[in-house]
Image (cartoon, rainbow, N blue to C red; front, top):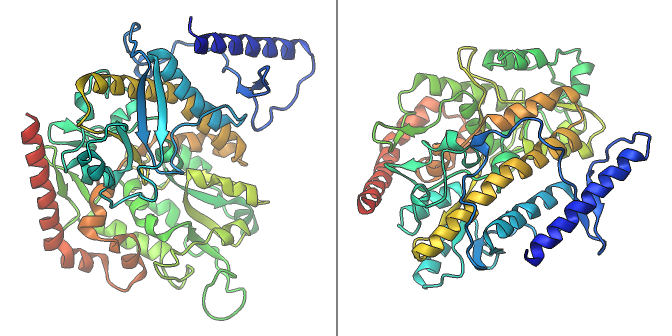
Length: 502
């Protein structure tokens, strides 16, 4: 037994002893926010093991890696942007941090590898850079995996510098912990390069949702739509019923400002339209019969209607705080101080509860109508692990095994730590919202449009169109030819890439 496994056994014994003593002590205490910790002899806080499962785990959430895999201390290194860290280097007594550390320890112990994160390679770069290409051309192989934003990952894929993750030994993309429901959207032709892993938290924290201030609802005697959401009847028409019900020009200056009261606001006006479109299941770009991207927005009356509805409801200067795209119409301050009923937001913004005396409910974005089967939560700025193609086959096998182990373990341990202990417990101050937080988490999706929208459509639909005077149908007609030509260039690159892989 190696030293690391001996330490893990010691910690497990300590955890058991702590739980046993607590059970024998009598009395019952309320579980604190960062509960479930013990202290090892060195004074390091260690997150205790979860309660045993009463039912066997879903096979779709458990990896099938061979039990005898041993990579003899090989180095596995990911390049990440500081602030997007997937891993941590020790226990610190904080629930999510410690769960991230355990993901790393699990892969290291299972496969006998050394897992590290490198922040220097991507220092100061997030999107739109040639950092990865330059790194590959330099011949350096210290980093095997780059964690990149969706649009940056897609663009770099077409430079032929990444291995198709669908071809990697040991990676099983049919499993839930690889976002199997999103696989079709993330493939190019016959190959999948991008897969939604479970050890990066952006797809969870950035899942779109809507907050409702319950103090404002009570002050204006408004019904909170718990039952509508639970019954699948939270639709465009249901949300529109609230339009204008909360509106007051407090300072009497004839225009709505941050000192006034409004029905709707946003943490970022650039995300509202894309979130609403995802919720209504009408993206700008979908897939054709050859599994290649195609614009589906032109001449699409339903999509145009969704755009017009969004503009009228959330960007009406007579009922919403006016602004420009540079200001991004941040109105969290109004929501926090009970001057706004609804705030379009994301799960990660639930930390606003720490600033508020009031309680707020968490709901998914509305469905288009009741005929739509499911709610949909767009996960903006998802990050994907991309494996460079210059590594040797044996190294690629090791990388695939480590990615598989981390993603599976994170789905079992890290995501529940975030959802159940952080979002549903620590930041949730409305007990009835607990089920809806889980609903948003379960309905996350990646939009293919997000990977291409900036290059094909520019940043107009994310803010300027909604804030300007131009009608959505007019804008779409004006950019159709240019957008389709840009997308065709992408498709040519994809076809060339797929052809070379055959």
